[in-house]
Length: 395
Image 1 (cartoon, rainbow, N blue to C red):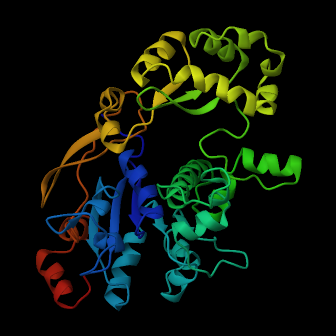
Image 2 (cartoon, rainbow, N blue to C red):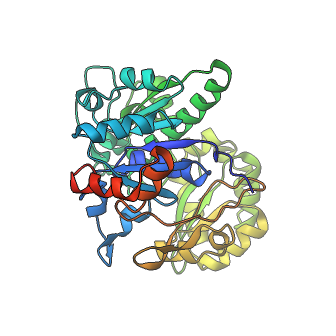
């Protein structure tokens, strides 16, 4: 079996979430990812809970399929080792504040002289150019500044942070895409390049219809709660025993929906014939739908909607997600064997490619677990030489 990226070696200098998410995607697709960590400390997220036998489950969820190498870049020998590794890898990924690598004398302009084919990917809060480039940032700051909080939450409610750290995660996704594009570019140019991804840019890039609405109306969109801003009906409705999410995205579905809920009369109602009209008369339409949905249980409506071809689904909590038959069938919850804690459960790999195994190859590494393996493989160092580097504080 061959993995799509098994010929790519990645030197991963990232920590916390945006960068590690990016390199995890590359590792899942077969890239050999060497995670470079500070000796005795490691990735900041190793100190984030919850813990299993003093090992961070947060860290483990983001660093599977990677190997850990500790290296002190503030030492001369550490920098020498680093440069030798750079000469042998395809991609370097870092998510430091711009200028950090330059202060170490290890910026892109220096490293590309060592390895002209190097793809250097930098993911930061605001990117390497612009007036904010030197500012530090975390997910919450970027969600606030990028506009997504201003359109999230209950109607007339306060701006609300999205639960998952989408500021980080989306930046990780875009960085991975940028790296893959640069890998392809290198095929026909023979040269490496720099990929510069800003978390703020990424948030602006995913605002989709919110930006479109602003440009058309001149007014900033406000939170709409769980309803869609421009599609009706597209929101949860109360059932007899809970709630069900309903998404009617076109006029054909609207007619099917009306028949399934026993309200065929709505099909001919001039107020609701098109989606723009359903938006205009939302306050009149919603109660007419709600009074029907409340009559049956969530499961009863699910069966009716599935049979009727209406997009719908229950509002699952996390436990129900992990036990959902579709999630399980797609191998999205997997068991891995961690070198310290043994068997644990982690999210699966969402990219399915024909002929490629989507099982996680190995769990997240313990700190410095692969020092000897990596240094002997790439630099030809002996056990004695590696032991000396540990004693000198290099590893």
